[in-house]
Length: 116
Length: 113
Image 1 (tube, each protein chain N blue to C red):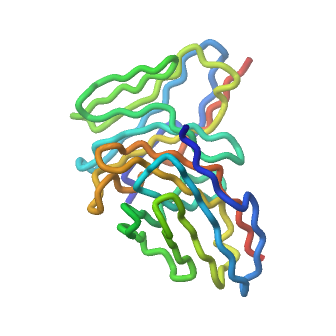
Image 2 (image 1 turned 60 degrees about the horizontal axis):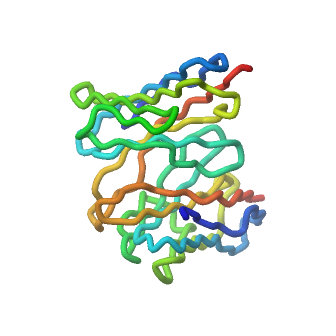
C-alpha cells in the first residue's frame, strides 16, 4: 500500500517557468511533510518542510501548499532554473514510539528537467 | 552545519564476505536512520535508532545488522548478501523530540557480486 502518492512522474519546464509537483497522503497520523531534492549519485537534500497547522510555507523560490482536508500538498518552484533539474521527492512522517520522528515515507519521485 | 558523513563511498563485496558501512554525525542529533535506495526508486526505511536504542526495524533480513555504538555513530554490518541487495545505502540523522528534520549523508554505493 503506497501511503504517499506523487505526480507527475516526470516534468519538463521552460527556464523561468513555474514547476509544480503534487503529493497526496492517506495516513492521517502524518504530521510532517518535507520535500527533498536529489541529484544523481548524491544523497537527498532537505529543501523545505511544512506541518499541518499552516497552509503555505515559502522559502526563496520554493513554496509548499498544504490542504489538510484533501490530504494533499504540493511544491511550487518559481522562476525555475536549469540548476533545479533533479529528482524531487515528497515525504511524510509522524511521531515515533521511541521519541522523535518515525522514518520518512517517500513518494515515488518526480524527475524534473528545466530547459534553457 | 548539517553534515552527515558516510564511509566508504563505494563498496564491492562477494556474497560470502562480511563488511560494514559507517555513518557519523556531529550535530548532537539523537535519532539516526538507515535507508536503502535502488536505482530510480525512492529511499526505503530500514532501521531507526532513537537515543541509541533500536526503535524501528522494517522487517529487514538478518543479513543486515545495525549497530549504534554511541550517539554520533551508526554502523550497518553486512553478511552473506545477495546480488539484489546492491543499492545506495543512505544514513540520515535528526535532532529528535519535536524536531523531525532529517539530514542525509551522501550514501554508500554497494555492489554485491
